[in-house]
Length: 361
Ligand code: ADP
Ligand code: ASP
Ligand code: MG
Image 1 (cartoon, rainbow, N blue to C red):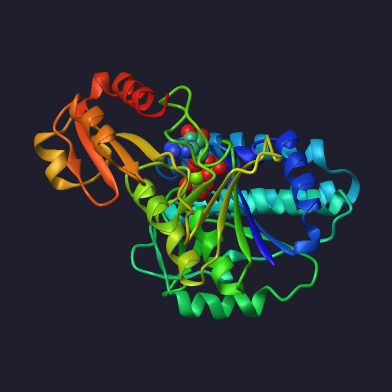
Image 2 (cartoon, helix red, strand yellow; image 1 turned 135 degrees about the horizontal axis):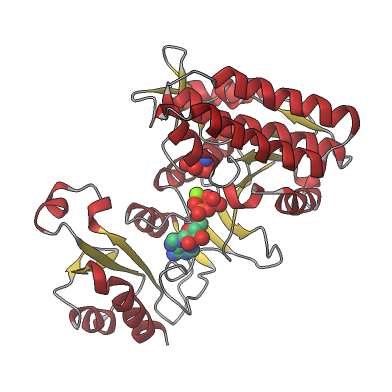
């Protein structure tokens, strides 16, 4: 079996969900477990709704958006039943100010609608409750899954023969309360489900053609990297490239499960495969990550370098050339997998572009 995780933009509206259905349809013989995030921007709205005096208005906006998608994808009895389920989820959090409980509603609503859309499209789909499978300890906003208990619960629940669909991100804490795996945690959920079920592959469907040499929102002309090692992907995620949540690698690596990063809007592109072995091509490959150091959370950086940005290149065959390029922009710090220079925040985007050009073009 395989796990297919679709992020927020991949389920942001009816047109996107239709693409998801066709992609999953093409892989039904591999017995997928589908994992969905909340619709794009919904988690953010629910975070706001947790503490806002305008909670009712915010939840009403969420209701409108989800009902709009229901109306486009569903009809008849299925439409009425699904809208009633969405209504029930929203009524359940109305007046609630417990953050993990309120934000869990995003994934509950999206998964309810996407599951109904599969049924409407003639693909029988069983909805599974991730809160009964992913069991965490620690802080309820960034819960740490107990992998042994979770794996047992996943195996017990996921016994359906046909298509199964569940939520990323959401879980239950050891005291039985709502918990989540930290923002962007759906990738991590997908890897945990894959590990628990011994999946042959975990697919992360998103809005870019796989893992690229830099964040395409920061650097123009990036290139797709077809194969990335677990170490490289972990380092890259640690430095802030949000294409994969930093924890995703660990459960996959435990069972040696490859992670394929794919584009929902361009499914014929092969994307990137994250796996143990990487056959090195003749050309050196590097990943460029840029991030405001204020967000990194390291005390050292937050102190004297606050307001600066960190530009990192992660390299496979890092040689003199990358070092020389980086040195041209500051004093590089070198680790086995990456070279970093810290630069002024205002110039960071431009410098990332220049470094990228010099190394790759
Ligand atoms: P999803 O909602 O599907 O989880 P995210 O927005 O979390 O999607 O992750 C995809 C985004 O990650 C891309 O749109 C891109 O801007 C960003 N990103 C950052 N670094 C990279 C990189 N090296 N390669 C590809 N995408 C990257
Ligand atoms: N919806 C959650 C978030 O936005 C989890 C995810 O999409 O990965 O953080
Ligand atoms: Mg993400």
